Image 1 (cartoon, helix red, strand yellow):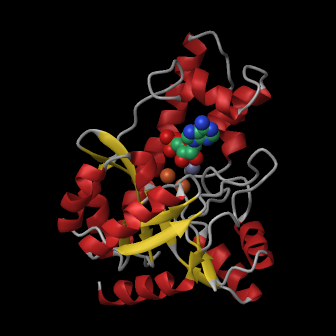
Image 2 (tube, helix red, strand yellow):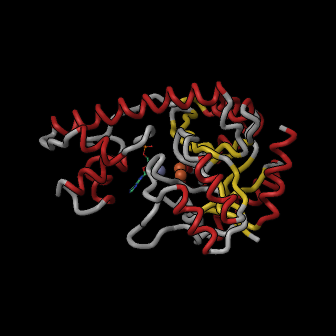
Length: 272
Ligand code: AMP
Ligand code: ZN
Ligand code: FE
Ligand code: FE
């Protein structure tokens, strides 16, 4: 038995619907999946229903963009009460910040001689939590870039002409918010963030786990974080971070988290 606890849908910057992700997970033999869209839990009810229909376990989730010492990192929340009012209020706030940021990015690109239409970008996003990949899709569609990689490299990466800053919550606020909604807080893709120095500090502030199993973690990196989890008494999680088609090959199926870790996450969430 195995799980994928890091998946995106078209409720944020993924391209598959919740039903499509659940169907693919079932086809690949997963016993449990979680939906971790950026700054929203709105896709969870539909994925929950789809999973129930298919006979696989669903774990609610969300990927929060957070800040620590001025650096951005991602915090995953699992087993959240998706009707928690504080959680929903905060998520609505950050969704609005995301929408405003898209407007700002379109203005910056226009000043740079790239006249994207805001209506078209929002149409491509078609969700409450739009992100840079939606601007990237508009850049590709408009013929300004050949693909998403080029869109990020030339226009969307931090410091590039289309990039705009966005207000984000601190990591400790996110941890507190996740706990308040009954969930567990897990640092996403620590091997990509490369912020090992803050892990023990965040653990003392209540962070519950590390995403050790991850598409872009080598075996050595995974082992490194598994050891850290053991030393710090942290939960182990893992997932593919599938956003839909990825150069013709969706990432789902590439990471198989042994189910024993899911059991531990559920036990921890109940006592949190
Ligand atoms: P945002 O949350 O709006 O700042 O956008 C960040 C998201 O962009 C990440 O979660 C990834 O899904 C996506 N992303 C980052 N870098 C790239 C890239 N080089 N190509 C495609 N997508 C990317
Ligand atoms: Zn994303
Ligand atoms: Fe992430
Ligand atoms: Fe993600």
